[in-house]
Image (cartoon, rainbow over all chains, first blue to last red; front, side, top):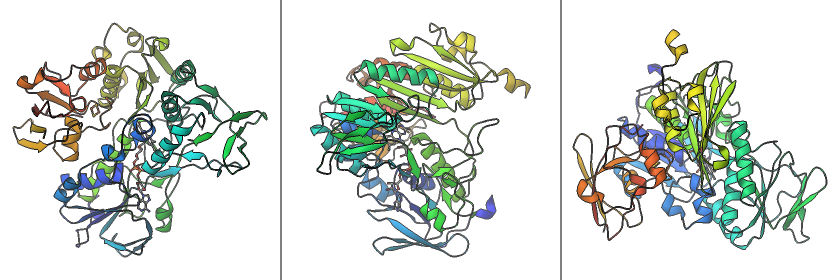
Length: 430
Length: 107
Ligand SMILES: Cc1cc2nc3c(=O)[nH]c(=O)nc-3n(C[C@H](O)[C@H](O)[C@H](O)COP(=O)(O)OP(=O)(O)OC[C@H]3O[C@@H](n4cnc5c(N)ncnc54)[C@H](O)[C@@H]3O)c2cc1C
Ligand code: FES
């Protein structure tokens, strides 16, 4: 891997995108001993912040963008990290060996020896008539969250389109605020791409118990105008109409790949990187929601690349890319995990359940405290945990150590999972 | 002004002025104090903000919640009687100064 590292020629690393991945990349570069300049350019005006609270406490509790800042201003100065906010990079010109110049919308330019792309993703737009009416919201940035919070304060009937994490977290926040809430989605179960069937079914029941109406398999065909350019509801495929004075669309995110495409990098549902965070040109690195990377865990017969949107993945990929730039390459290999908070329900997910052939449920879902452990070929691969944080930590550490938890024993809630972690017989043979 | 003294596993000391309302975890992460990761941002999801609280300060803190207690059972370095998740310790004028030791590892 050494051939890819170029000795700094003075302008150092330019990181495009100043959020979870970009800031981690910059901090890790310093931690790994990189001494040349580091510039991080971000399009948003807010100091780099954490996104998870945007759909949670920022909507329903007294949280402000300042309260969710990732680092203090003094910290960046101290670390010699130059932070340029409110500048969107629109073009990059490249010379030899990875160096080049990036141009911002404003006309400012930023020269670099090495480029890192941490540009994240944007919300997928609803492809139906009426999607641009007033009162239709998306949620990705702090500004979106502030606008949505203001709108929720006035709203009576909230319609959430999409049954993924952001949709369900917004639904929960809106219920906490006292709104009437309806969720409608194309899929036949909630959180389809992120959790297994028992967990999806639990979240359906849990939302219904808290007064949310849910329509599965019902993607709106159009949004309806109140005659003044404001949304008044949505029409479903069967012709029925859901009324709403506020619509929130949460139907997934699309990786921002324009700069990568302009640079001629390979893109396939994300900027393609190898296990070191290196893109196809052999010099540019990328990390976070904008990348598609080899799975960081064993996934026999699974996809060659995954795009996994979570804080943990953004952080781990950023560390990996920083290590490469600092000439200390270590491949990305770690158990991906994430969480979601809805009402008083804490969901934690560890590992990738893709392709599991068996699962066991530990605890009773109706008590709102249970876990689902997923197995493939007798081998523990993942788990979903609702209000069972100790079990989550046990499974995460078992997976990280390549160990297992016997499925038969796992259902006994009187024994802590931590005590059941055992050597994986398959690993031992292999 | 609230103040937190962070002592690393190796005995290095960092004293940081904090803001009332911020947690011991936030104060460390924002100011680049090593030894505390705080990956989930303080919502009791990651258990990477484990600290050992100075015995003298322990009783002055809000009690451990059920969720925190469960998470403490799964920290990378095993819990001790003075273990806390530092995202759950909020600074305040009344609390004043605190002293915590960070474990050898968080992840
Ligand atoms: C509402 C919400 C709730 C979430 N909740 C959770 C959760 O509970 N748990 C969890 O694990 N994960 C959660 N996530 C996912 C997590 O926040 C993301 O995976 C993470 O933020 C990805 O980080 P990133 O740096 O790759 O991308 P982003 O956070 O999207 O940051 C990319 C940044 O780059 C900037 N940018 C883009 N293009 C340019 C350009 N050309 N020039 C300059 N700047 C540019 C953008 O403005 C943005 O600030 C949530 C996400 C959202 C939106
Ligand atoms: S910061 Fe995640 S549990 Fe404390």
